[in-house]
Length: 308
Image (tube, rainbow, N blue to C red; front, top):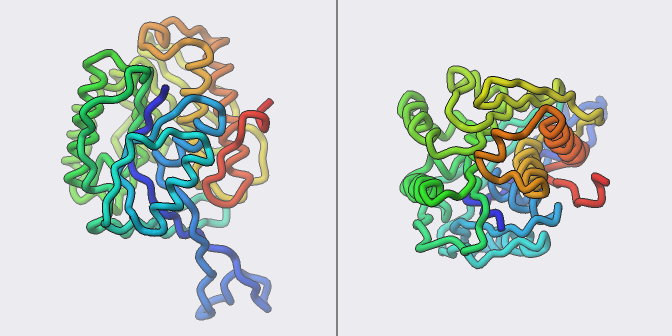
């Protein structure tokens, strides 16, 4: 089983409205485009993507008892994700308002004050069948839950569980950039595989060393991996008509873990042993999975049969 820990939230995604001038939203000074609620959150999307790919997956978080929270749990169960590690609480669900650029890239504004995920508590243990743990995004920023997620990362890494970290940097929710960068550096000894976007790497001051491998997503330019031994391999992006990029990086996380599990490579020793052919296979699979997500509105990762 792969355990995904972190926030589940609702993305409010703009839908272009009809406009007599041909533009969305009625033009300058016109009505705003309607917002469509979509199930989301980086870790949540990763869990759903893993479930759709057929990998045994559990989600570990705190989810609201409100209507949004119920819908989020229903989405996990529909993807065959185990929800037994999910804590529930009466606090509201976090909202993320997405803005989509002309190239499909997405920006976010977050409404996270007093929301359920921030009160996440460290679980006593993970299932004995846990082979890997992945974390990231806002859950590692917003206290007091962030400290509980960090403790989970350290504990599971210390007992030999393979770990993937995707910081998925969201500057609007990081109150002290320097403090976060210092904290991020302290996580690296506990990380087996680090996934960064080019934007994440620039914000952090470069691609760090330490993990057995670092996968860098480069948008339309594809994906690159840098190994601890100093090797570097890249694959191009899969061609696609981009609708938006929401959830693409989360799909990459899931595809990487799914393919590594299929190759029995969920250990740092196994990562060190992967050759160029294997890495190109893994990265190519992740690129194809992300392309499917980019072809659809919101975070809608592919099912396994869509990648056959």
